[in-house]
Image 1 (cartoon, rainbow, N blue to C red):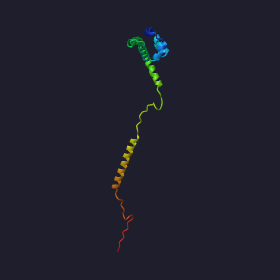
Image 2 (cartoon, helix red, strand yellow):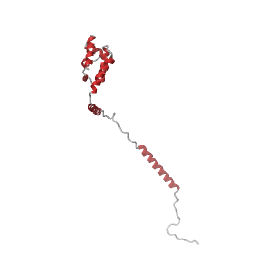
Image 3 (cartoon, rainbow, N blue to C red):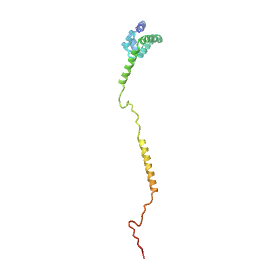
Image 4 (cartoon, rainbow, N blue to C red):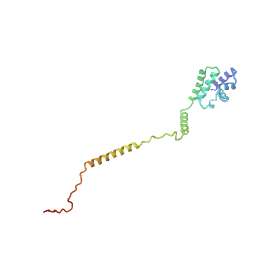
Length: 162
């Protein structure tokens, strides 16, 4: 990356452009452009952002941006191919734990489990029981035998009329 940064710096100087002028035209800070020219990749948090800056800078200097990006991608390949699988796994775990910590916990973002609504079930059961009760009362009323009323209750004395 230092070679690429040095190449970009030499091209800028060869075109007679000051670093301040380039920063104003590209709307970048002086420190960002100096870090690109010195090959300081660690100064950038996002490698894709750095890639976009390099592409923009190469176009500004009148260079073939595709060839410059190929050089940058070659650097990235060499740099990332030296990372062990354990380091990649550790970085992934760290990223996941940071994401868990960053989750916003509020009543508006909380995920609620869908609760089962028992009210329709209660209404159905109550309706069925009510229908059974009504049918029972109707059948009981229809089949009810009239009460026997004997006119002669108690000890029956037979009277004879003469």
